[in-house]
Length: 167
Image 1 (cartoon, rainbow, N blue to C red):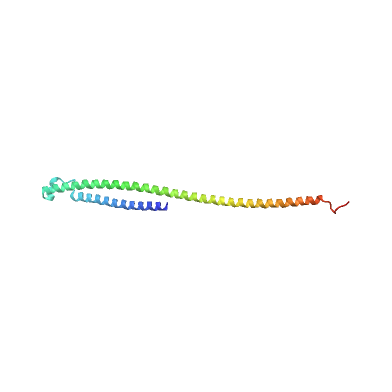
Image 2: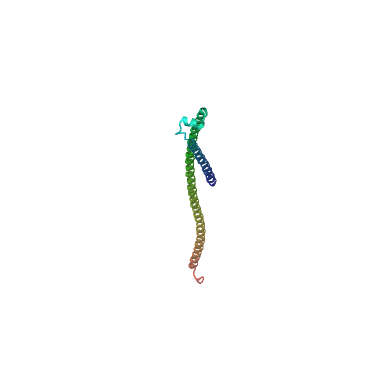
């Protein structure tokens, strides 16, 4: 059980590390997208303004197409990373629940072990008392025999006349 607990904790730690990496990656992707849009202001720029800024019509279209592809790819990556973060958070919750259940089971097991030890001690004590009672019964039986023999001997002596024969 301790090994299970350690492996769960290691897995939780690795999930937390991966979660952190994914969050940082997500933040950098969002930052990259925002900086790209902030630098170019594509939403407010017309195609003519973009052409003026870049100078060449073909280059401007290529840049616009590239930026759109990057934006779509970044959006998809952000969604994928958000889904992954959500999945990892759910997995972490499940692992924490399992660890909690494991700890409850360990506590219950320890209580059962303590109860078992107490019962075993009572059984051992009872067995010792039973042995003592048997020994005492033997002693009492022996004393009863001795007493019976003395009583039988005293009764025989009482039946014999005192002082010998009188004929």
